[in-house]
Image 1 (cartoon, rainbow, N blue to C red):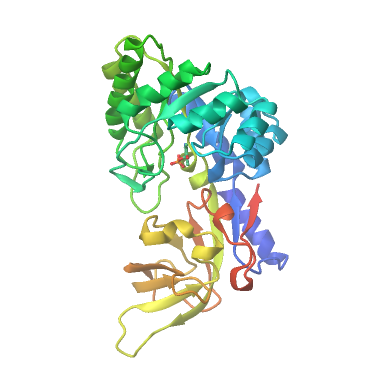
Image 2: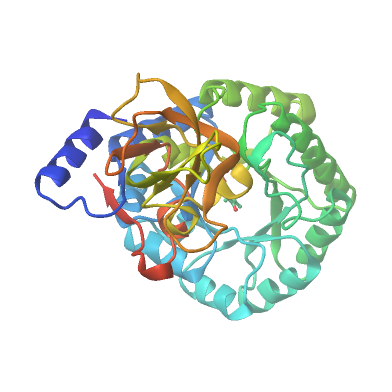
Amino acid sequence: MTERIRDFLRNRREDGRDDGPCLVVDLDVVRENYHGFANALPDSRVFYAVKANPAPELLALLASLGSCFDTASVTEIEMVLTAGATADRISFGNTIKKERDIARAHALGVRLFAVDCQAEIEKIARAAPGAKVFCRFLFDCAGAEWPLSRKFGCDPVMAVDVLEHAHRLGLEPVGVSFHVGSQQRRTQAWDEALKSAAAIFRGCAERGISLSMVNLGGGFPTKYLKDVPTVKSYGRSIFRALRKHFGNRIPDTIIEPGRGMVGNAGVIEAEVVLVSKKSEQDTARWVYLDIGKFGGLAETMDESIRYPIRTPRDGDAVAPCVLAGPTCDSADVMYEKVPCMLPVSLEIGDKVLIEGTGAYTATYSSVAFNGFEPLKAYHI
Ligand SMILES: *Cc1c(COP(=O)(O)O)cnc(C)c1O
């Protein structure tokens, strides 16, 4: 929570515009985060993962600071170009692309593509001849609160074949990528992944292909309820791991922070719609907010991400509450297995603040499920 967000919300309330939940992102915090990454990993180029929050104001700010961008679709590429970045600062990092989208990205000037199999290489060779490619390898995301493990990447042994295939088809195989899992609280995770990366470099070298780049992915955390290591300690840990596995032939590196760049910059203000019990004996009360899984809090799925919740009655005695959203879908319950501790005095109509919500919220909100509008977002 920053002073600027507090002022914004106060004005919104005074103007009577506070009907429905809203996300407010403080761009000054994003600027600090960008500099934090640049300082902690001075030799890595930053490719902001656009999917975390693609708001035009935020993309424009990062473009002006010199950031590069990791995109997953032609629309994201166009948004980044509109925000003022040139195509040489964009990677098409999704390993699953239609051939016509590869062609459109290529026509827009994008020359760096992610792959994780030979069939994708063939599409790129046809639609973006001569482009640079990096191969994503599988990594076990132990320690991540929002794992991205099985869907993307191939076995490290297979990655060598994929990159050789790229070389054969006239593409430029530049390196490898991995993602340690989102909200990764173990700085050690990069060490394990870089061991595999170095093995792929050696495998390619044996076939006469010299790689030069490692994409270290995202995974840098936002502080929710539990403490997380500082970005500096991630930087130190990654640098040590690069030295250990690559000796004095350290490759070019890039990082793709999403959550770590914007998560702590945002706060959602929501309203208590109902407080009730299911029976007289019920120990936990049910607190229903005007935002839930379909309104932007999708990452509460399986209670993975646990957002800090502030109320105007903090300091009063607390008791366990099940926290749920407003829609008529029983999946729309955020925290039940591990209830939230909220003030007993909490009342219908109270405004609550859900912190650390700058990433993976606004674009996750549905268009109008049950007639609830998409989450309003302000980037100030
Ligand atoms: C989602 C994603 C990221 C960002 O991950 P965070 O954990 O939010 O930092 C980075 N790279 C790729 C390829 C992604 O898909």
